[in-house]
Image 1: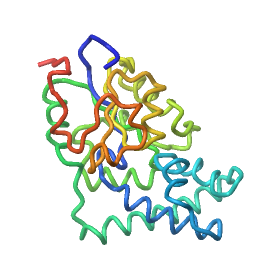
Image 2: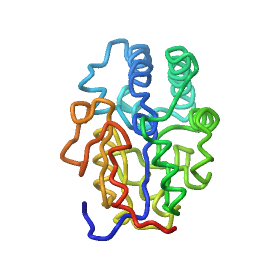
Image 3: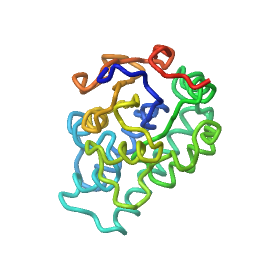
Length: 232
């Protein structure tokens, strides 16, 4: 932990962090990548260059150049439609947040602690998540930072997390930040997060970028509530 003061809240990534959907994204991107490039992408390259980044950055990597706005919208949405289809079919439409997440979010809300989402998701997926998970139960709309087309710099740049800090009006050093991807964990480190949480359903075995974490968990029940400054 980078600070001796207690934390004032948490900034969460969403995909693979609050919602364990990494397999669905991986499958959708692997199919899309082969269509775009004409050849498969290795898992190593996927996790190093694609996982956790926004669609513009991923498509730039796959195409070897920056896509036009039209290409980004079209190719990105084709991939997201595949992803949402996998989400619904594989779960029978019974989607749920990561284990322990609802209880932790309730704790944050009940104790006057801050919470925000900083996600590379675009507006289509975000609308899907808000409806499926009733996110406004815990998060104010202005505290959900996403790829809204305003020029947010992709992870591992800290831009996304720093925007969340500004929305909360709390310095990064006073916030925990939760991530699952290498680019995300590097991003929260560059943002100077007060406490860096790496999360994966497989725990430490599922994390790439362990050096950028203060703790690695598989369920949010493992978060020590005494780290936070309650405002009861």
